[in-house]
Length: 139
Image 1 (cartoon, rainbow, N blue to C red):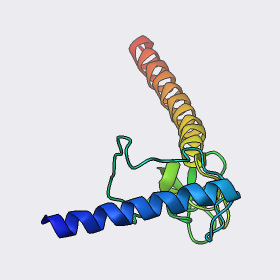
Image 2: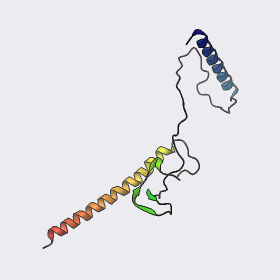
Image 3: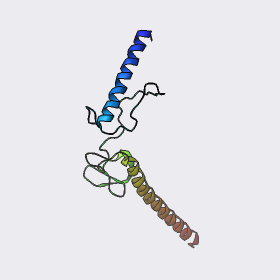
Image 4: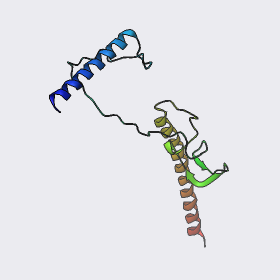
């Protein structure tokens, strides 16, 4: 970067930081922001920057499922042996969700499905063991 470009960047940074400090002092900016926890920022301080790009981090919608995690068909019928939890599912939050609820959703429905499948596995194991015992004791 040449000296003229560096000077232009420095001038823009200083102007931006001054605008931020003025908006904080006034209690709001042109975009409606009213909270300025880091104001004033000084150009003489150590500043860190990062590139921010738009990303898709959550989708509102997905597989329809029952309260116990069973996946439902388009007709609303359970699909045997198919379960879902977390962001693959849809319909829990409606049109919007509160930030951070995704992790709670994954935890709650993951626990529900996990416990349900563990109980089914234990039941199948008991049935298999009972059948083996009955077969072993048959004449």
